[in-house]
Length: 146
Image (cartoon, rainbow, N blue to C red; front, top):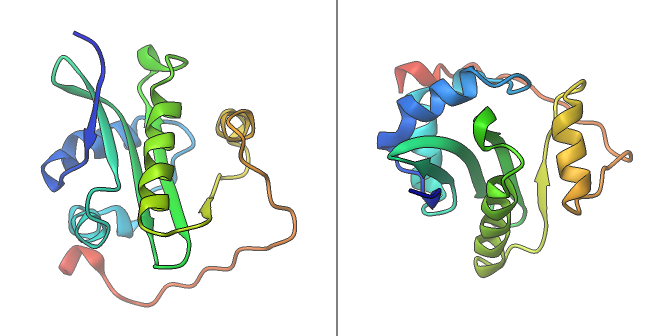
């Protein structure tokens, strides 16, 4: 059986979270709790994807937008399926879905030191920005309680 790409659902959470947790270079936080991801999927219906092989999730990507800009995060592919084209196909589907929603530009963040991710994004036509600095601040909300 070949790899099949489909929309991520909240029922995929445990399998996807395990894949994220076992992938070097993926930074997880409280926002990646089951409730946080369920809320994200609800707000960005149909944009996030998983890839399955023999009914097992082997790749996943979160995709969403704020009405103005799109965002891709947590793109992971299990080791045996890397360099097979599945990541590129998933990203292209995300970009097409964002375009269909009227979103003209998409951003993503790569953790410092994740050279393989940075290389992938450069090779697939993404432009590295050197003109911005990202700032973050916690709001105090506990997503595990929502």
